[in-house]
Length: 280
Image 1: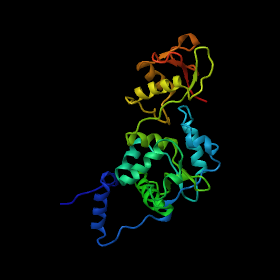
Image 2: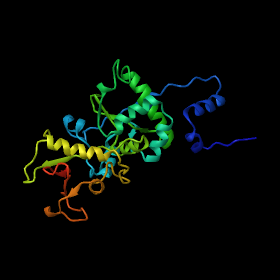
Image 3: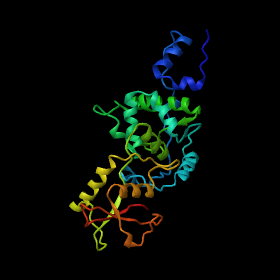
Image 4: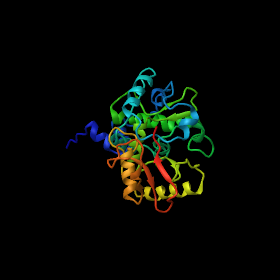
């Protein structure tokens, strides 16, 4: 009896099953460590995220132009034959299906959509002992799997700043990995005002109460970004919050279809706070 396995069938197998089949084809041949090109992290320069303090902690905006970033990454992320790519949801699922649990845990840091400082990944109590361990166990292993999934021999997932102190993946890849890893979408960001239109300091108790209301209903969120988007749209976010107890102030001149740039929301438990979704 003969069994035919296509490349697509092979990619669906677990990592252990793949290794077992390969060992049958080449008995006694040890598993090869990742090649240097598989451990590549091209640098993106100039940095599309802006100054370091602005993008280490600031959330991604829902209306960032994902297509523009994709074009930018394709034009700037090349180092030799290496290219930082965006991955789809299906590719993200195939990717995590055959990487180690430790790699999946590390990918969750990148899937949050933030740049990850190298210092949080390395050290005695961190996921990886040193930079070589990081490149071999995470970058090399994930990039090798990525090339199998995408059938693109020059593809890499990670990029870094020029000083190799921060690592990131593209926003579209982060969005795909969030869904594949069943991670929640990030909480929306707001600007806060009182009923007279004066801006409120974020540290006030009233603002904290409003944020907690958002966090409470966000736990039931099942929405995901639309295809080609890196985060939920403003319309998705606002409709969800209204469906879960928030109210839109119609007397502020905002249309019912929520196509205006600014929408003001309140919540019955903290009526002194008026919040607008924070978009550039």
